[in-house]
Length: 177
Figure 1: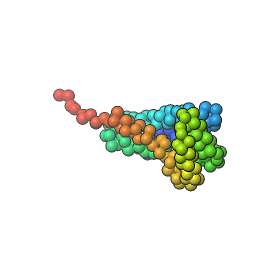
Figure 2 (figure 1 turned 180 degrees about the vertical axis):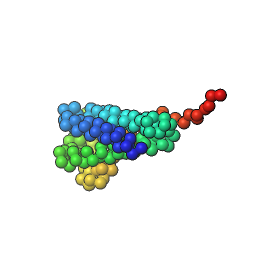
Figure 3 (figure 1 turned 60 degrees about the vertical axis):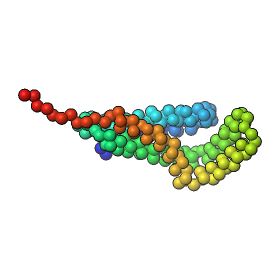
Figure 4 (figure 1 turned 90 degrees about the vertical axis):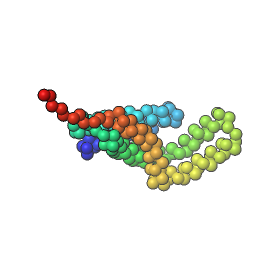
């Protein structure tokens, strides 16, 4: 199981890391809304490796049989490692290459609120919340925890779906008389 998890975690992590770097590089050109769409699309593509990893484990290692629990364990480990790499890449990008990300995102969010004709009270409340969020993001542990929650739902859904789809009982050997 270890080799399967490592192999498919590396592939999934590379897809997510490369996707994040490219998306963040072009963030100013494509905007935050499209960047978010691209980011989650890349996550889904990367987490397809959960499915392929579980299938590979089932078919090549486990004798073409796997329980839901085994499948979820393999898929969950692949997903967990990929999420951790995602967080690591984000922290490197954020603290070394994008120290103004929070300010740019806050400006974008305020512009969105203004174009949606939100009241000044709503805008002021959002600005206050964004200042608080920016302060929280300065702490790398809080930043990591918040970032971890981005890919986690996608990862869990992919691990659950993979386990449900790929579970397969061992076929009993029957003798022909």
